[in-house]
Image (cartoon, rainbow, N blue to C red):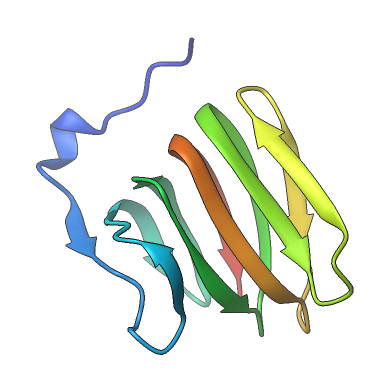
Length: 111
């Protein structure tokens, strides 16, 4: 398992998906931003179980550090994600994100 400075960065920022995007559950997100400059963001993100609608205008690369999630595109194609899986979401992607088991990922977002 990878070591990352989550505790060194404090408790992180917590939030929930907008009520209009929520499909099921009561997911809570915690984010530890490790870099934020020039349209580049990277860090660690963790979510408890739930399902919500997503829409991307940016690029995101991420790797699942733990847990299980299902990413579903607008056409209904599902991608199951678990520890060790890496994925890229491109601008224009829309669909849903469902956290089956509390999921932690590291990410890099480019606007």
